[in-house]
Amino acid sequence: MTEEKSLNFLEEIIENDLKAGKYKSIITRFPPEPNGYLHMGHAKSICLNFGLALKYGGKTNLRFDDTNPVTEETEYVESIKNDIQWLGFQWAEELYASDYFEKLYAFAVMLIKKDLAYVDDSSSEEIAKQKGTPTQPGTNSPFRSRSVEENLTLFADMRAGKYKDGEKVLRAKVDMAHINMHMRDPLMYRIKHAHHHRTANNWCIYPMYDFAHGQSDSIETITHSICTLEFIPHRELYDWFIKNLEIYPSHQYEFARLNMTYTVMSKRKLLQLVNEKHVAGWDDPRMPTLSGVRRRGYTPKSIREFCEKIGVAKRENLIDVGLLEFCVREDLNKISQRRMVVFDPLKVVITNYPDGKSETLTSEDNTEDANAGHREVPFSKEIYIEQEDFMEVAPKKYFRLAPGQMVRLKSAYIIKCDEVIKDVSGKITELRCSYIPESKSGSDTSGINVKGTIHWVSIPHAVKIETRLYDRLFKVENLGEAEGDFKEYLNPDSLQVQVAYAEPAITSAKESERYQFLRKGYFALDPDSSKDKFIFNRTVTLRDMWAKEAKK
RNA sequence: UGUCCGAUGGUGUAACUGGCAACACGCUUGAUUUUGAUUCAAGAAAGUCCAGGUUCGAGCCCUGGUCGGACAACCA
Image (cartoon, rainbow, N blue to C red; front, side, top):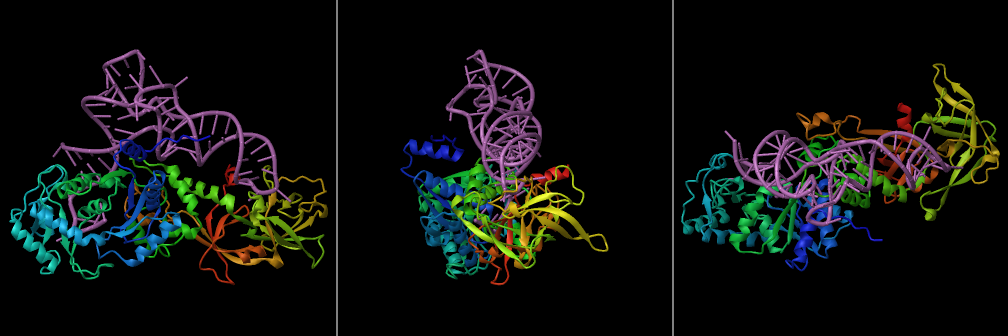
């Protein structure tokens, strides 16, 4: 049975273009500026651009939009390439807008010769004033009527370094009264005596986004140039340059960017969090960056699935981060190794178990995967259970341990709580329990049926580990609507570091592996770990119906 | 006082281009369960921003509004 899925608006455009014979195959591009790390919003764009090309048998270029040397660095280039590949995509060609600087310069000269561009000596303030407002037309620059010859000389001089930063710019000659602000003689080139991460000091003039992006698309014969909504007003200019340069007509299409609850999704804001040390770095597991979610333990597959599920449209949206969590649980449930780890230990002494004895039990590595195999788990007279798995006075629907009550220890025995030991202050320090020898997991002949099963760890065999428990980075759902500085809404409890006690199998943990700590959540080994210090990041908790029930 | 974009359950995306508004997350209830996980089953939840119009029939077309967003960086 083939599932007929409806098309999103971009797929519809492409299918129509293909059907009409407008293109034989499509070419898309992913155009990051190397001035920051990629985040979930980029993941949406990557999945879209690469996904479309994959679906329709085309190809996708990776093109760095590196036209502003003062903010761009090679470090970012490397991280971006790494993130895209981690997500599972491979570009056809690795390209840079800076590869086209010479061509772009020639394009500019061509426009000057057509009297469609001129060198302007106005200051940025003057140019801003000339622009007018959305409701009032702009005014012409006093330098607008320079001759072609003079413009040619001046522009060559700009390139030659005869002027200081900001002294002159090259502007397109369109229409200062145009209804679209972007058409009011937009800047094409500005002077920046700055070192560029690829062209070093070869240039001291750099093209603006509007005079680089569309032309780069055209040079690469990009058929569908997909960007976010805020570029809609740029499209008219995009088309204007292509038309007047008489070059390959790429077309721009816009979709709504991704917003998620309880987080921010702008490079500027993320950079601020990093610089002001609100997080440990770009790859802090609380960050919505790809390096952050990777370190947190998210899988590429779950992110691709998420991007599939959120869809693509032109309306602004705010996606519930719960959907992302659903996607990662769905994947992790199938692939993660199960382990038992106690976070808030409560000592249990099994009174009828021989002193000094221990035995080896076996437990499934993954109940969802019959091929996952089994591991050995040591059992002994003294074990830890979770404090929350015992209640001295238990409500009716509580089926864990309580005085006189029984529970199953996962993959081990059924135990009964006989006695509660407290210290002078009344705090429970220990439980005395008896076990049912015939109830051993796998060969249970006791005939006893208990409702609850809890995880545990043998005290003499326990391995201390560090766990890093993450919560949402911000306290408010919609940061877009929050007043004032977004940093005021940071969640002070977004990271909680806790020591926990794990079964010995934890010592063979690998960074590439995913783990489910039974009843506690999904975890991934953090790269900060060493041979004698295991650090685990909690990717996401398990769904917890009991927590809801207990609240009632 | 402009131009452009958008408006469908709580959230997001659909609706064969005019034919009884569907899917996913979330929520509720039940079953299964040696993870209160997973899995399975059932259910609640929108009459499609508003007002007119065209039509046998409108979420889809037309007109006029309302609301939200974008646009005046030598950023991308």
